[in-house]
Image (tube, rainbow, N blue to C red):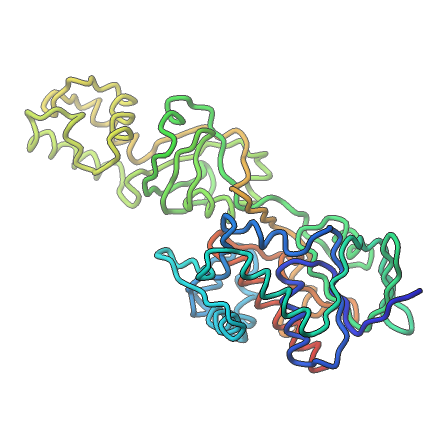
Length: 405
């Protein structure tokens, strides 16, 4: 027996639910089903932000917001003018979920629990009679005179319109490719760097601002850097991994990482600073007098690396030692061998080619009555609530067009 709906949404994640709810709110007469391959829905929402759910970011100007998207910057300008971070906040407040802004701009539910978002979505789904059907792996999709037919492992469905909100699901990309949609091959984004350097990793837990770059490329990023027991992480590294996702994949995650611990300062400028220290703090122990306000263990690490004795005074510094220290502070180099996933952030660069989507409606330019939302398309962002904002915005556009047509 075939189950028939006006709209079927494939994928029970953030984008799938937001699409379904916004269709239902704008056109309650439509019948809607969400098909989810797993036993549970909204699993990524549950673990995101360490279980707190980083709903969006407090960046309210579309032209500024798009700059956080290594892929999708140009395409999202129009959509963000239709539904931006402020609209997300208003939507959740309307449904009795208040959000709070943290110092770095990330926004979370006031409850600090992702369950608040999940409960909101599930309760609204019940209110609007949206059918949530789990353990349904879509195996075939084909067009008929009556609409789109979908086969799962144990059921057949019929829909007038379908929405793909399947995230980074290779099987769904393969299915779309069979319909002549171009899929940009996926590569990981948002990852940390593995460095086999015991002296560095012994400093695990230390964080400090730095400018990071990949040697012999144009890839560069700035921000806090965190030393971990496997290498380096933190916002600076995550930004670099996001913008360099494709280049670093081609390098097979083996490359030379350059760290400028002084950020915007050049080597010769730091050398001059060190010369001043030598004069002004001549009689002071260099290990105890740290002009640059580095964490003590990190400063000692730099001095040791520059082969400066623990009992040395600033006056004892040779020209060669000053040059070595200036070089370390501004052009510190490490060999990266591999990557690690950042916490539970499973973000992929790749997906449906952006040229094949109408970004006013999120409709496929190739398949009639087919829409996309969320990470199924070739859009991704750095960490901080931006990937969710892409999901909310693209879902809202798809839902609005479906509800009014």
